[in-house]
Image (cartoon, rainbow over all chains, first blue to last red; front, side):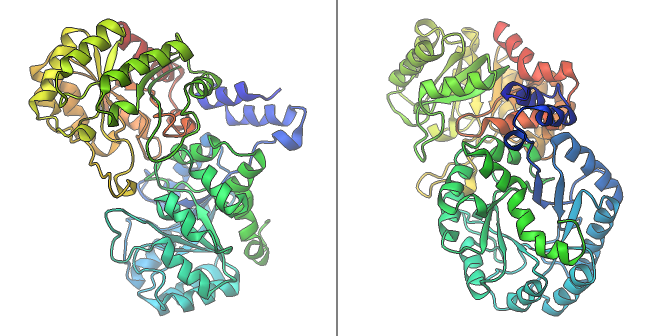
Length: 296
Length: 255
């Protein structure tokens, strides 16, 4: 019978994930106790060991197996480039394309775009998403996302129903010049109410970020890349509802463990945990996955 | 399992699940923790630190006898702090103390720090130094506190040879060179609560020895499961895992 003690044995490491899953599946109440599917919306190839994207993906899969992560959304290549040229964008996205081709059952790709190069970004979107296997857009710190230059990129994403993962922070010491805040994403989301925006890091200072995005139903809170401070997920569930929260880690820089612990340790209903760990992201991606013929 | 980094009382900027003593103890027991080295948030912020330490000892006894092991706070910038140290050791029977140099307004080059180490070594007390409590980028705008700079530690440890020191709440993986210098200078240990990066705990252990890495969660300020899952992520052999989760702490306290 699966129980709390089994779960903690798994955490200790004396049980494999397969054993835990088997225990879950053999337990009396399947619906209530089936292990949650885990999808990570915020995952990078940077800093993983390996010379090639395939080498790195091999290492990624080992860790995913160990941690019970079913699928990751890969974005950015290596090295990390804050304001990549069009050529660099292509090279970074090529790395992600190779990685997801190596492990298509474990990773989807989010195309990295740079609003400082709008036409090149549109071309790259067409290459990687419209005509390629990627399913979302990743925007980082090249330009604040409230800029009008974002609009054609968002319109192109909207046409394919591709969600947009936008990095945001609210640093008490001040953000970098191109670094977006949750306020910026709210402006953009207001101009494009039909597009799903994933507010990366929920602004880092999540007690502010959650409040900033509270009124926009098309903006999701993403929990990656901050200390595992107690209360984050509980507040998000309380203020946004569990349907608007998406799990992500920001690995390799962040430990998968430290970020996953935010959800596994949160004092929330199991149904909310499942939504956060994969069901919300799966729901957001379903239209584009179906359009591409992937199993949604 | 022994958790070397737990706190009682209230974090001033938010209520936490587990910030009532009975709730904290229930949370630890539920997670199979058999011993928790427990400080108090009051020791960071209160001037009447003697009372904070007495309350800590009292709460540990009342709510978590045999589970909560009190680690009192010492602020060497307070008048007559030596009496606080004496009370922690002699009256409250604490095996160690916790320092928050950044919140108490001194750096490690300050003579006060050496003095605390010296007197603690004479009493065979374990000294825990918390590098930070939260991300500097998300602190309250009126309470911005930079992390403790550990670079003076190697020199200080060489001049205080009896010191048993534990560094809490630091992401050592990003500065392994400094960690090695610190280790080579004395009897020093590190907790895992703020170690980041995939497999960060294993990388730390590989670099400095598994014997120097201890399980600390920073609970209830942090989600306990985050620290627990880090140990899993690191894929230790059973013996190494047991060392990190329990044996290293037991050996340190028994020494």
